[in-house]
Length: 460
Image (cartoon, rainbow, N blue to C red; front, side, top):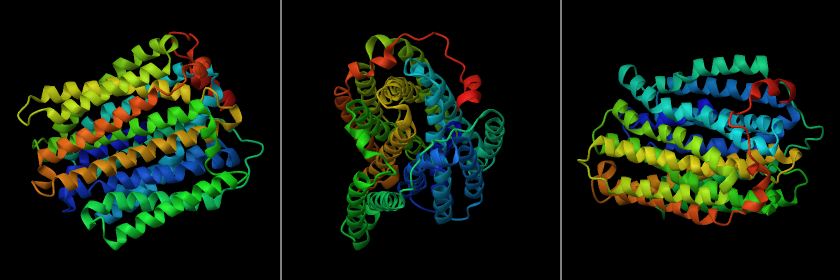
């Protein structure tokens, strides 16, 4: 989880540098981000079955090895095409890391302790966004963009050693058969639709490649839904959506991810392409977002048992939308501390969304379905993030086509407003979340979070 978030934030700061390195417009370099996010979403469905069949520890360590190896290849890439291909491979490893790791934790702790567990997860993932932009800016300026990927290698080696020593295997007695048709249809459909959305502004929405990709991708996704509903052991358990609480929280986190990750994609590009900031300056300006998360996590963990997920998520998303809208309205000559303050606001609102969402989403899911449910949760978050980045990149391309392109501030304002619209949509959907069904997770819990490492050695 740490490496996933560290990698994402470091790469965001490196995008402008990558565009210059490979001599491509900044709006096209989003392929580096989208390829990774789509690959995450494609390979996440397999992680649930693989963990159930071969054991969570074995799958986790294998995925970690793949992620670290692909990171090294990304650092060695000699062209944009190579980098995108290696990012797909990196996403394959990352796509199995997070859901398997989350399933290990949530199998270990009862529902009333999951908010406390969420705090532990939040702190683990905060370290990535907090250190990523600054570390990335420093490495890019002092060494090269390649170190934005090489940095995963020592972290991965340490994580592998810890996992090898402390994690224990967990296998489901009847994991079922591997859903190959679902894996192929889902991956192909999502990949083709995302290709059309990402490349449409550059190639033209009416071009044969875009039209064929969009149509074939849509057909594949519809077929995927039909196949998954009829398969006895589906790759993605779509019937979980009939669980009202689970379905409602998924819809919220989809739009929250689109707005939040889309904003984290836009801000470093805006600072470097429009305001002329260096990678390190962009990282330092993005950094307060993580501080906002740290501060609000403490508040949300105490409010959640009394307030419940619905109002916390709705309020957090309105707060995020307001901060993102203000980012769109800030003048080019404004003090950098205004941007830093607004990034703090974005992070502050984010914890109000994802911590309650994470705790409530599995409240009514059985222990046997936990692995598939966490996989489903992570899939839709990555799909939401990928759609957010691709959509905002398309807005940049279209809005900047008649002006200054990637350096046109008007294009960025339009993109920020679309990101705010994503967050507002999530706020409206949050009002549908039934607090009563999340009551199991709203029981008071100790102010000191539990120590999961000792329990993981017994149960994970």
